[in-house]
Image 1 (cartoon, rainbow, N blue to C red):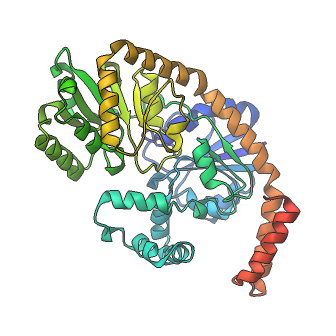
Image 2 (tube, rainbow, N blue to C red):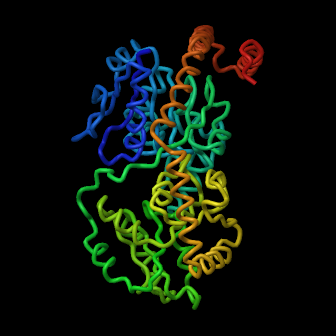
Image 3 (spheres, rainbow, N blue to C red):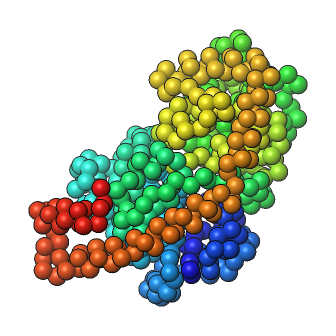
Length: 439
């Protein structure tokens, strides 16, 4: 079977990193090519790579010659030249984020279709949310925008007409069920490789900080972009004024905007934690590995949850670092003996108590860390991921006749002017569900 895998190929794309891990095994079963938006540089790939600049008709015509097209979608501008293709030529969608709001909005703005998207949100949600989508700057804080993205994920826009979807948690599968013509497959996301292309260190202080930590310091890290849903403030509040946690130093490891960095450093000073807290900024691959090797505890406290699975949690688990998570969304699916789960309600109190216990017990930290590493090594490989993608691909091909039927039916309704009549559409949907067993 000839398959086109449409995905970013930037060396700095974590999604490209995990997808590429499956390509060698996929190529043993599929005659596969990788199609990607043009970039200044591309990551190595064992199959032919075909860059394209504009996702126009010529690209659609070429992709239309394949037996199956697999579109890789994530909530970032890297995917804005992939989404228009997925919306016009049905294929299998590999969806990495539970919210695609920023991708869909960015693409609509680029294509001068924001008004249509706003009307869609007004019809399916309400006028207030439609107005927010048109003008996100009207919100009072970045956290409000993230909560909006969780409430209005716009995954229906991205998946409309698709032949199936691949997601990376049962939680995400439940959210997208019914949005695609085909099946929803849950695949085990591989752990990202140790090299993501970050060859230039943007934080000269982080390396010096490693050497400046006291010998008896307990290093608590939060890994990933420092934004409003990472709950770094909750970590600071849990540490504040707690004598039993006086040896704990907190590092927020990852890129941070100036206003977020300033706000967090100001809060740390106000809480008396200025000497035990830092925002490292983006670090090199090599320095990240050094930080992970030194870390004693990790925290992945995301709320709201916008991703379908957390690659950063897998990275921390692979390093043998025990990880604390909120017991919700896809984090609840991690084994109880691998991660430390705390309820979201009264988060500071629960977090403080968990930190007390794990900070005081080095043996338990090592035991938890070893379990996490074993879990990742035994369940998160490129080969296992490829196996799930192959299964999803077979299911997607079987859904292709249904896509042809729905496309033809939609065109006929448009020609006779019935495509905007709710009663007609509802009646036809009932018949389709009966004929094609879509329940």
